[in-house]
Length: 184
Image (tube, rainbow, N blue to C red):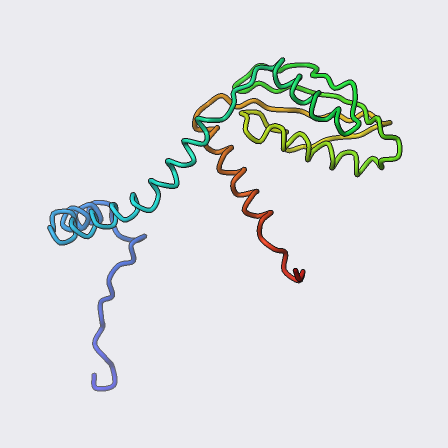
């Protein structure tokens, strides 16, 4: 017996603990006034950090222009015509949880390469729709024989509008950051 150390009990890992003992442990912690104060303090600090930002995002989302289909068509036709695109039209509308609309236009600038044409049209559409509830769908813009096409999506749900505003703000922040390796 001299060479052997006594067996030491190790506490059970949480994944091995039975649910009743975990509930009992949680109940004991929650009944402790000190633990409750720490928990309340933590909740308040989290609320203080997130409330102003969430309020700004929700305010921005509520201020988005909710354009109708004809208004979007007129807006985009006007904006892209200034850059040499012509015959902009919306095609098939799909009414589901959201409204999606296919669009086509022609590039009137024959000197512009197809890649440049797609990139320029994407930039123009995203800028024109920046303060609206509409967005260019993620599949982007396709080009064949001088005809460009893509799809737009209208968002009507408030929570989805908040997500749209957040994603646009993240994109804006990403574009504002200088690329590594490039000097100003």
